[in-house]
Amino acid sequence: MSCKASGKIWFNGEMVEWENATLHVLSHVVHYGSSVFEGIRCYKNRKGSAVFRLQEHVRRLFDSARIYRMEIPYTEDEISDAIVDTIRENGLEECYIRPVVYRGYGEMGVNPVNCPVEVAIAAWEWGAYLGAEALEVGVDAGVSTWRRMAPDTMPNLAKAGGNYLNSQLAKMEAVRHGYDEAIMLDYHGYVSEGSGENIFLVMDGELYTPPVSSSLLRGITRDSVIKIAGTEGIKVREEPLTRELLYLADEIFFTGTAAEITPVRSVDGVEIGSGRRGPVTKTLQDEFFRIIRAETDDSFGWLTYI
Ligand code: PPE
Image (cartoon, rainbow, N blue to C red; front, side, top):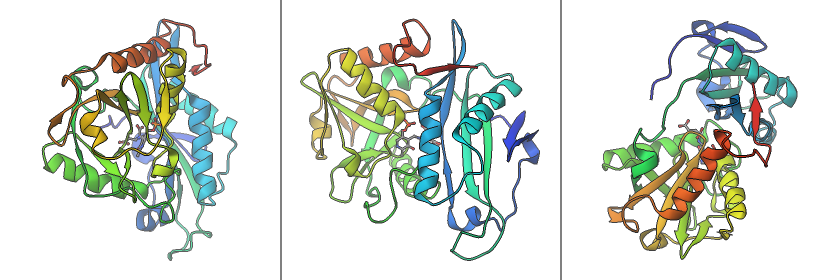
């Protein structure tokens, strides 16, 4: 999905024109994948425009940087303010926000410590991630031959640019095989996550999702769904899930900032449940969007109005 190349980008503390937010080809990040980033959504609702779980996203950005020993030359509050400023500056009411922290131009060689840590924040309008109809009719997924990284290889809890090389392989394979999205297994062979989403199964009215130890990104939408399920009286189990459970589940859905809550209608060509969005998925989706659209109380304190 393309992003509109216009407006301003917050670039190392200054608002610059979109086309001027550039870096040198010998920047460390270009060669060694040394970046961490976030994906955040801002929604227009009847009270104004609100960023969804801003604090948690900024926190995770700093956590990702901490894992890679990158010192961000700003505080969490400064980055949160810069995100809000970027949305305002571009006059966006509803958008996707992409803060990225990377090792810049300094020295070549694997050791990154002598390269400056730089920060950019861009925002643009981004519609439904897996297609306009996906939220209702669901997507077709296939289990990837590419596995998620073993825990002692690349840290999955860091939302690092380099991790997405693994996601890219899985996504390209999925699309080549005619699927919309990939489901990856972890290094033990248990279900992990999608190329850019977490995954939930519904079985006998209860929710199942793989634990953090299954090599996944600890998604903020995943956490939101777990919390909403709690208020709806739906039991959630975080436990290792075998591949064949994907074929037996009554319902499956993906969660992510970009994907929101997207039903999965088939896995490896096997129809899930009735092959359409199930009742538990719909209940969770409805409540998720009611909170975002300010049609119910923001009792979790998830919305930051800009
Ligand atoms: N797993 C992965 C691998 C992942 O990339 C995401 C987000 C998630 C889980 C869900 O995390 P959260 O957004 O906190 O609920 N993927 C982001 C990037 C997608 C992209 O194509 O770029 C996103 O959804 O913004």
